[in-house]
Image (cartoon, rainbow, N blue to C red; front, top):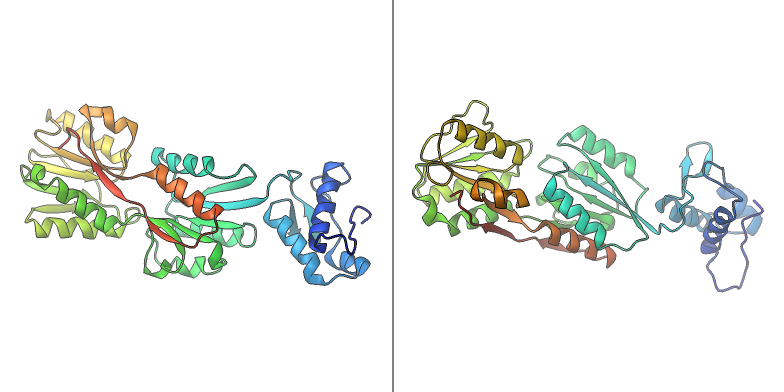
Length: 332
């Protein structure tokens, strides 16, 4: 315990002196990754401190990823990187090109001394629950993309409310948490309305909707638009057994099915934008080019990442709707 040094009347809080002592011991090589450090009680007794003072110091080091605790054994050095001042838990549903834009924008707008650990639940509720449960107490902030799971509140409520940020999709259960989100219902309704004069040449509008992945607001907004504007419509959960027919317009939320649809259209010698229309979700560079351009409905993921970074850096408790726009191209 010789490397721990706590003095009175030096103008530095005692818990910070403990932190500085451990940081200095790491820098000079006195302790290394995997080494056990003094117990809370031993420091408390030696320097006549309260248990809360020592625990506060260890909790700060734990949040920064420098130490970790093993039940029944004590505290150990987990990392020798003392430059990390904050750790962020980031839970995505999946990684794709536009989520990568969000992630890169988020990182580029954070301070260099913040470490972000990224995880993926891949629309699996058990994985979602397990990752959150295992993260409790290890991070300064928790950014969670809940997707359209039911009962996410039962898991998220175990985290400190002021440290949680809901990303992309939210719901009434999560309305008390800070968030930056898309309004999928309003987004699809308003954007389809803006091009309704281009849609009237199609006999039927079809939405590919996979209940385990797509936001429920997307479905309700689509159905509302079609009913109010007297469009014949259909909701399908797969394109596997679907044959594109002249006079149809497809709204496709994911890129894998977009490619499958284009392949099917070409096999039937039909022209996109003439015989069959396509509106794709989420703007990417590829959609500017393929088939002369694919019309997209998309939020600005780079803006979402930047806003999220600002909220965390400024410790703001806000709920912000990220706008959704339609980019018109030849596919309709």
